[in-house]
Image 1 (cartoon, helix red, strand yellow):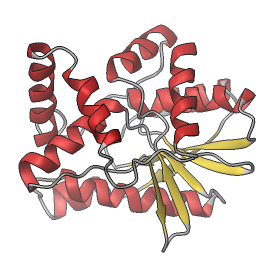
Image 2 (tube, rainbow, N blue to C red):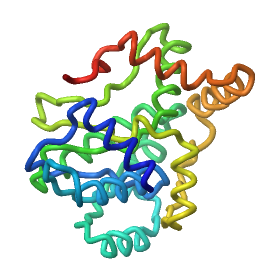
Image 3 (tube, rainbow, N blue to C red):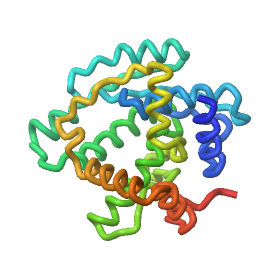
Image 4 (cartoon, one colour):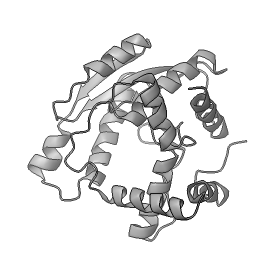
Length: 237
């Protein structure tokens, strides 16, 4: 946990993600990444020089998932927890029968999460993207769109008056897996029919093979994104 805390704190400070008095909604899907983010931010709040509070929000997509273990974790670490019912699964798979559902699903989830955060008085939303997500998104954009592009560490949504932050961008996915196992975090199985069968999974496999063949490829690619830098990736003074 100490190593993760150090990486998250450095990312938060590099991109000025947290200010005094922030109320941050943590999007908790029940997956390994969001649960890790929740626990790390809760620990960070104990000693970070800028005081902030967190609220955990889970979107119920309509898959009848059991989030009671997540609720128990939130009680244990003293974090306010809210489950927000949605019809996202019904819209995407039952009504529209999307063949490539990931983009629309992500858009609908973002909208529902932002609305829930605002209704709870939060000024920021924290998402559990890690460094592997950065590389995958970059490569997806390059290969399928012909663009040098990626999401930003912080994004201010002018219409919503809320800021999205991604405090785990310096954390590799393998470290997330380790902390989940070490802390026995209650990961909720992802029942989405597209899970593991998406373009992102193809890119994940490609990056794995490149890193295996060219040792240090992932580290160098992440460094290139920062040094270029892509829009929004300039470190804050």
